[in-house]
Image (cartoon, rainbow, N blue to C red; front, side, top):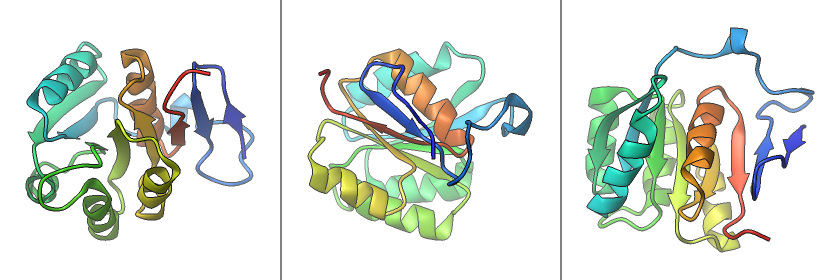
Length: 162
């Protein structure tokens, strides 16, 4: 297992035990990573889209304000990565993640939340999330995290700088 703490507050943990390094560029998935943004706040969805879409390898294919809409959009849009908030109307992000990882094991879920308590992080990871990122993270860390989970690397980030 490898860990890299070179970025502020972020830990990248290799998805496959026993690997000494992250996947190489030759093993990366498609050249464009398709992303679905799930958050009940329109301002956060808009900001996330703006951060991601300046990068040619990232494409926001859809947005959802609830878990139920997210599940329907995953079936329709087939994203590579879903950015999931914890608190959503109806199904919460952990419940949606559990359903997504069960029904679409090829889709990677990155939890992006304002809540960084252990109970939320543990719940998200147990539900199958590939990582957990605080909403306080800089945009460049979000971009790096999306790219990392898309190629099979798990990402965990603490909620506040230390």
